Image (cartoon, rainbow, N blue to C red; front, side, top):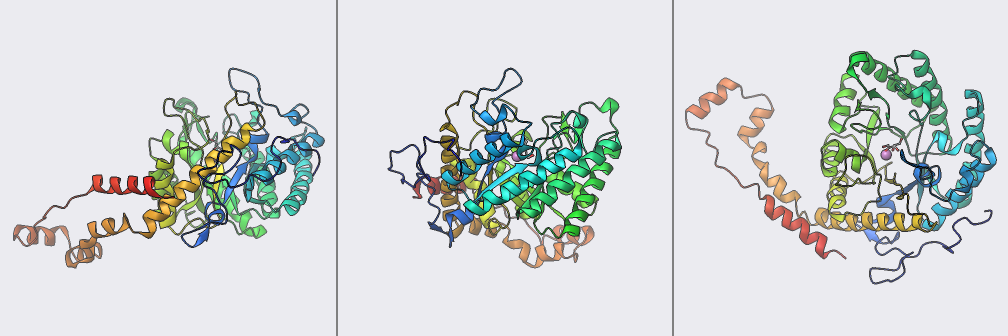
Length: 443
Ligand code: XUL
Ligand code: CO
């Protein structure tokens, strides 16, 4: 590796334990520690994202970039793209995480024509392949950025102009093949501008058909090239568009069912996207797990006091313990993992701030994993849940579900006094206390 960009951090971030007083050290994340029969690293499958950490200058809608990212000065050149990649792999290695994630445009300059971009992407995929082989860092997922370029202002697959659809298709072909080439574990589709700004100029049903056709083409191409990882849709209700079609897990579920795509797609769920949709993250993960749609998570959170996507580093053990519990209940991650789609605050301009953000977030996830394992292994919640529904296995419950009862037959039995509800406690407070007890006691 060339000269160090993160020279303040000498080597791999060590595990210092809860009592440790080093700031650049993990307090809880201990990759080899066995939790519920598996190494912590293999449970969490942490990934660092390329875009916010290496391709973003710190610019926001009110002001210019604030962050020290020298390679962004000359971002049209392949040399700058290589320097950016050196810094990224130096960071992944020092942080000691197994995975990274990227959009096509994060790693390759766009160039003048599409063919320039395709060539640049090919070059940078080869560069990534070399660095992955040197460091052992793997690709959790790749994706195409179908929202930043002006051509996508009115959407990509859902654009009123089929020429834009075609452009998006060309881009996804390359991004999917790049992901496949790099051994990516999944391929993600976040429909940033697949929505509308105004219904006055929008054909809703037509745009939905376009999106379904696009996703079908992606699934067909995945099979054609032999990519085995799942395709993951990342729901978000709004921002940048006023309304986005992939609103939340349940909306995407209905969409996939309508277009016969349920076998092809699963979900990548992001904490703050759930919040923006008016759900808890626990809800989104539980929904996906229960319906066999769970894939992966983006662990970044929002800010309770505002309604936009702040992409902050996770710091709530309470929130993530419940989500992690559902993930363990569903068997844990398979191809998915915990991606840090996180960005620093614009004022966090020291190079080492990128370490502080990730270390704190990773420790939060590690602690949430310990709580979740405690709840799962001791059946703290599951036994109560099972007994609450136990009567559905009895004569009446099974008769209803299996179609042996009708409105008329049930009315006869109720009128005859044969069926009388007895009432049962939901025991919510007791269960909440049990969750808190686990949060307070695990170590
Ligand atoms: C935007 C978002 C994206 C996706 C990948 O809110 O979450 O960064 O994760 O395109
Ligand atoms: Co995301």
